[in-house]
Image 1 (cartoon, rainbow, N blue to C red):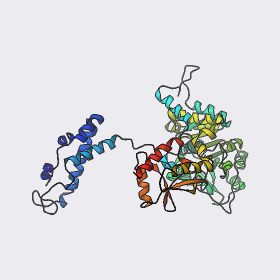
Image 2: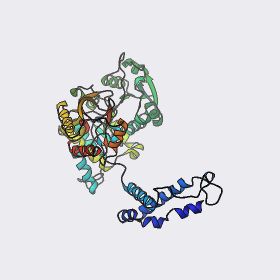
Image 3: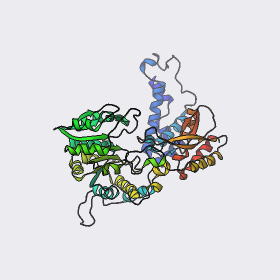
Image 4: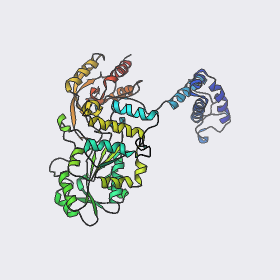
Length: 471
């Protein structure tokens, strides 16, 4: 059986001589095409002869006792075309741009939020050549990469010191390890939470070497609960942002000012895990008020941890800011080097923060432009799309903030509802398969596109993708 199969299938060399592969080889190189040809032939062998148990006992017999032959449509030309397709797929990046038409502003699966033009330019500038990442132009000696962000955050927030790590989960882990290893950290029972990716505060506490002390109940916690729990082994009192859920109804929570005062009255640290790191008041958009970094600074919190890539609108990063003594302890911890960011992230984050310092963030950062986009503008764009897509119509809908920020909070929007053709899931799959993939959602059993999360510059590609579905 194996010998018969070997005679039926083309050799690797024969396959490589076929036009689809020979043309691909001239552009992709011999190695890529050779590996693709071998993989296709190996897969075909496995298909024709999956295991000795499945084969017939007679020489040259297939599983049912007949002579072996290649199935129709699986000749040399077909195999060569399949290998060429595989070769091209191998060298095509799987991380690629898509159009987010879901209306979810901070979409974790799609890379959170787009960066500002200033951040992109800053990243490109430092990526092209050498930089002052750890070089002091004034002295000509070694510099500190953390100084770049620290100086900017001192201006933006008025904090004494700051460091940057690769995400907020790292920031929390580093803070707890540096400040509370072997000691207790007091947290409200309602804040012993789990956020995306299985990140659980109790697990992080254990990994840091700190001991979690829960106070209050799942729905109500008071200042006295913190005060009564602080003892000789207490290192800090900590607030944890609920991130992606809300507790409503019969509830009570301690304001950050009161928590910090209770901690400082007993000579322990106050730590605030803010999560999304809002620097702009979300209440002005009709949303609930997201805890702001400035409020924690004003409350005298010793250490504040927040993300760079959620409501801040920058690259993935975790920012630790606050009192110099607490920040310096984090900076000296051995974990710091394992968690530090590279020059490209530093450049993008500093450029993003400078937009706040210049008072331009509402207009230049995509996350705030999308959140603040007027409903009439969204309606006008949706109507413009509908005029180009036969059978579509504009309907009302809601956009989500997403990304572990402002849970359950939505904004009114205008949606383009595509004509119903087949199942919604089939329609979504066709949109994802376009040359510029479009990620949409389903509402009332129809596929809808939300202009809130589609940039003006993306409209031509979006309309081209929609047109290709009806071509």
